Image (cartoon, helix red, strand yellow):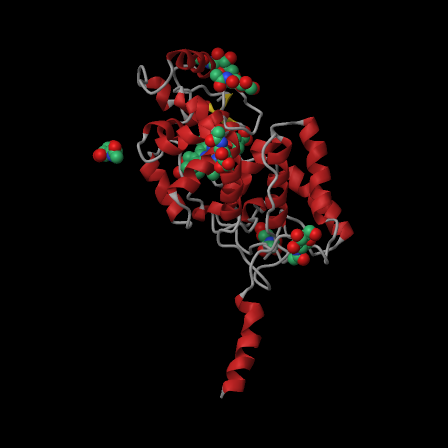
Length: 315
Ligand code: HEM
Ligand SMILES: *[C@@H]1O[C@H](CO)[C@@H](O)[C@H](O)[C@H]1NC(C)=O
Ligand SMILES: *[C@@H]1O[C@H](CO)[C@@H](O)[C@H](O)[C@H]1NC(C)=O
Ligand SMILES: *[C@@H]1O[C@H](CO)[C@@H](O)[C@H](O)[C@H]1NC(C)=O
Ligand SMILES: *[C@@H]1O[C@H](CO)[C@@H](O)[C@H](O)[C@H]1NC(C)=O
Ligand SMILES: *[C@@H]1O[C@H](CO)[C@@H](O)[C@H](O)[C@H]1NC(C)=O
Ligand SMILES: *[C@@H]1O[C@H](CO)[C@@H](O)[C@H](O)[C@H]1NC(C)=O
Ligand SMILES: CC(=O)N[C@H]1CO[C@H](CO)[C@@H](O)[C@@H]1O
């Protein structure tokens, strides 16, 4: 009796502890993280906006089903995929993932998942943009489903409480949300995502000088060319705590971003991040690791795609 209990314990152990691990590819694909880093360094030197693109891609991937690279699947004539869900078509940066994948398939075929490439590339892009370089556990597998009807990511006109529901549904907290939204310290937003703040007369939660500038760029009605503006109007390409300083000065672009500074649930954390960049950076890294673990596939679940844009058996 005792012996069989011990046997069961040892037999179950490796499976019960299946989880993401830092350095998952140490022995199976030694060059994995270096390859990602080298590609990102070159891409970033050509176009700094890649950091923003990858951060948003990672977020959207993790919030639809889980961090399983479902966002990368291309639609076919027979089947529409997640990336073509109409409201979310502005996610970009897919070519960077393709480039990394191509090199890694030559170096170590069928080994490094597309889901891990997104997580590693995002990590490196944040560091290149001046942010903290954090350790990111790997071992994700790629999903077998990419369904546009599953795309339910929060919209920018939500309240803090409204947006929070999307985060708690994924096991994240209010602080995680307030911290992850600090990613809006880089990147830009199309006018259509905040036009409603400009058309309903003076918005008391927006700095008048900013409102004037946004009206000049976006127009007062929907502008068919839909221009973009920086989410952090001051240090637009720097991964720093500038976003929190901006929203404290009523210079948030999205309604939700501005609400972070006004809502009494989040005002405190906004103030402390605005006052302490290294505090923000450390907490951001931890929140990214947490977001990167949402509903991941492990072990023999899913697959490792050979081409990130299609399933290995595209049926
Ligand atoms: C409630 C949560 C969130 C909402 C409502 C939201 C909303 C938006 C919207 C509307 C845009 C503009 C998109 C465009 O015009 O193309 C945007 C951009 C962006 N978002 Fe978020 N977001 C959220 C959370 C996050 C999180 C968690 C991250 C990453 C950790 C993130 C990173 C970014 C980045 C970097 C951009 C700029 C993208 C670019 O320049 O291509 N967002 N977000
Ligand atoms: C991989 O190597 C790194 C650095 O040498 C180490 O920190 C990590 O624990 C290793 N991971 C595994 C799974 O062996
Ligand atoms: C529409 O956007 C363009 C920039 O793409 C801008 O030049 C133009 O002034 C905008 N239209 C209006 C009515 O403001
Ligand atoms: C704007 O950004 C610069 C760094 O790029 C910083 O030194 C300055 O304090 C920022 N200004 C405000 C008002 O936050
Ligand atoms: C926070 O604001 C809500 C209304 O938005 C109010 O009911 C509540 O009392 C406030 N809480 C604190 C601690 O100020
Ligand atoms: C900023 O935050 C860091 C990390 O949380 C902390 O160690 C440091 O003491 C803080 N600095 C100030 C000036 O409060
Ligand atoms: C997709 O549909 C076409 C006909 O429209 C068919 O020939 C093809 O086999 C289908 N592909 C798959 C993968 O089902
Ligand atoms: C950030 C963003 O564009 N979110 C939209 C994605 O699509 C859903 C609907 O499928 C919208 O509700 C979100 O606003």
